[in-house]
Image (cartoon, rainbow, N blue to C red; front, side, top):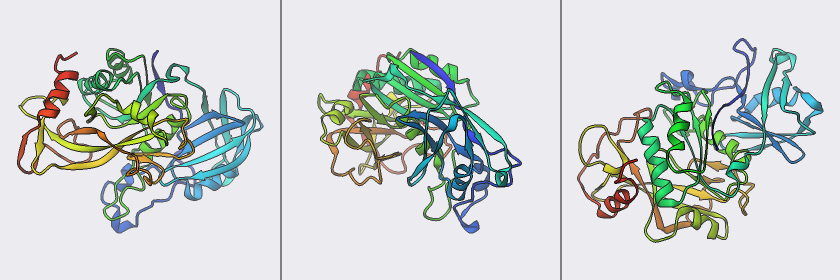
Length: 364
């Protein structure tokens, strides 16, 4: 099944008398901090769970009181919260319907918000899946990313959160994924603030979107997946043996494995492609690990983050020596920073060349 869905977040009205408080002091915000900060989102989505619902939220801070004092449809009642580094979960007890209505308290303006309750996605049950976020990445890059992981790692499903692309419609992303050899793909359109990076540490705490949507997928579409690998469109998992990253996660006692990242620069000119990224830095330039996890495994109560589960406390313990990923420098829209080419000497990496030729050398 290949489907496109538009997320229905719970958001404070623009004229609401309350909003989320900034995390960074004024001197550390920078000129675009407010434009990128999410002042209004209360929850990205409501997911049906045992005994009720879970709301997956950006960090709520004082806005937790707004939801605590709200009235929920269907007799749902507050059960409690779980707080994580860059997102929160609000658990409600009761029997939810198909739509959740939330009547805000008077001090928050009294508006009634509504969202579709997200239920099970059986098409991903037991599959080896990837999940990622994307905004305006070239459709060819998305297709190559998916095709590589199907051919080289045995990927079967993808859940992709499209963060407000303007270069194409989400349905076009779904069409590209449908041609990559997958069994199922879901493109979730979510045009919401990604979050700003502060000028001073801690710099990344307000980057709610990516972490929260990972955990929305964890509770929802990918809850029953066999294993889930988390990486970006410019990152390709590779094996030094026969074992895929999904197999490694399933074989792990913790149901969890990490892979070291290696920067790769492309060879050639013109529009960049993953397959051209066969040059390595001298000396080798590493980047922070990415991971694969079994959603129903021993770490099922740990939240997912960009580079691992929980607070990354297991990452070194489960790092695989036979798995790594190529971080392709020029597969980038430059949204974070410009990174065209290596800053120092490079040399050909025949291991990378052979691996990418095998998965992508024949094109589509």
